[in-house]
Length: 82
Image 1 (cartoon, rainbow, N blue to C red):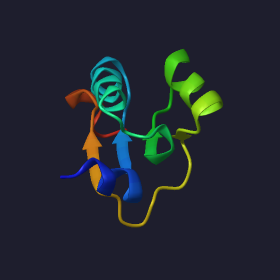
Image 2 (tube, one colour; image 1 turned 60 degrees about the horizontal axis):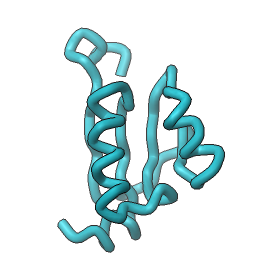
Image 3 (cartoon, rainbow, N blue to C red; image 1 turned 180 degrees about the vertical axis):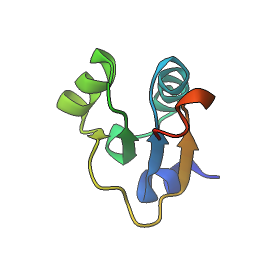
């Protein structure tokens, strides 16, 4: 998948704890635009909150209709809550 496609259509990250944050950090370093990232997380970290406040990342907002990627990054025991 091309980065331009993801930047255009969005990446949805369901859960952004340690695992989700590590993946997101790598994607951002590779050129993923924060404005194309949609995160659903009930307790976002200060880092994720700062990306929302300062860089335009979407946090707990309505999701795009047809994102390029949807990543489930929650612990197995939390699946029922996700």
